[in-house]
Amino acid sequence: MSDESFDELAASLKTGGPAAALERLAETFRRKEEYHALFDARLMQTRYRLGLPIILTTRLEDLAEPLRGKVEDAYLEACREAGWLLWNQGKLREAWMYLRPLGENPAVAASLEKIEPTEDNRNTLIELAMQEAIAPALGFKWILKEYGTCNAITTFDSEMPRHSRVQQQTAAGHLVRQLHRDLVANVGADIAKREGAAPDSKYLLEMIVARDWLFADNSYHTDTSHLAATVRIARIVEDPEILRLARDLTEYGRRLSQTFQLEGDEPFEDVYPSHGLFFAAQLGENIAEALEYFRQRADSAPAEEVGPAAAEVYLVLLVRLGRLREALDAHVRLLSGNVALMGFAPTLLELAQLAGGYDRLMTVSRERNDLLGYTAALVAKSQTAPGAASDAPSIGVR
Image 1 (cartoon, rainbow, N blue to C red):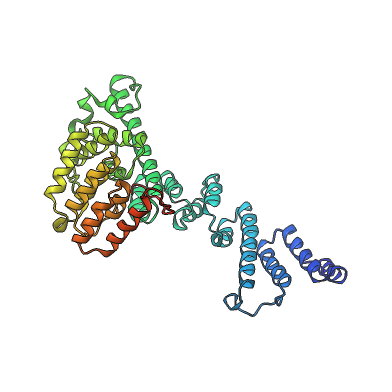
Image 2: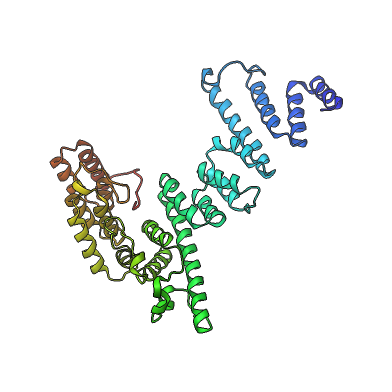
């Protein structure tokens, strides 16, 4: 700072008092783009305005209300100003230090999405998007683009489960699209090499029908472990567009030689045919066959003995097909109150609300000596009675 700056502050105090001096201080830091110091100046202004010592030695939690609330509000406003100014300078990590307390992640995510990853900033962008949970699916998209499918799959399995269902579904969509796009390009190039031109198709099934030679001698066109993992991850998807691509991947996968027919987890041990059924049913195809297949798998794999995976998949399929009452009945039949769910399927309470099956839930809760479930059903039913007001939030399919 120049001597002139100090003199200006002293003059401001003399002519306008402390408030004028503090405003001049803030203006100086803003003009010089010293935003950390601007933040401190704003807090000093707040303390003066509220009658607190400029140099605060009292802890915030020791202040009485409503004074404490006023200080907190001013603190957040100072965070907002300094944070966005630093963000617009490209100092993203420093900016996030101020923006984090605001709880305004959607606005930060929208701004983050406008930034183009470069060699210099991509690690910062991915860290903020995923590790700081600002925009996990966007962070996953960048990992997929910058570091490839293998890293993306590993990241999905290790990081995405801690984020929301919507974020997981969006990330899975990025993965399915990318692998499908790459596979279509690779298969097209192989066909062009043999036939002189690639077929004009965006779906694998149309390209591989009547071209068994594509798979001769253990041939493949993408890493087969990546293919199997992507198909597995696609289970979480509900978007019809992504489901069609995922199903298309299974059509390719089921034609691979036996060498690459890896054994999957229950109830998808036969990886590509079973996933194909699961995806197709959600697209309105082969529904009866799919329901029978997954019902049999659930019945033959008791949850108490081998875990709830098969039962949960069957329940999810019923729910996604809109068969809520059937799903509620299947939940009661397949999953006792002692089985911990994996989080793929709705809980019994959620299903009861989705299906409006509160009487059934009360009966089951009595049988299972479950006071919590019984009371939840009792109250929820009273809220749905004619003329009853309810502020209970609705729930979606998990």
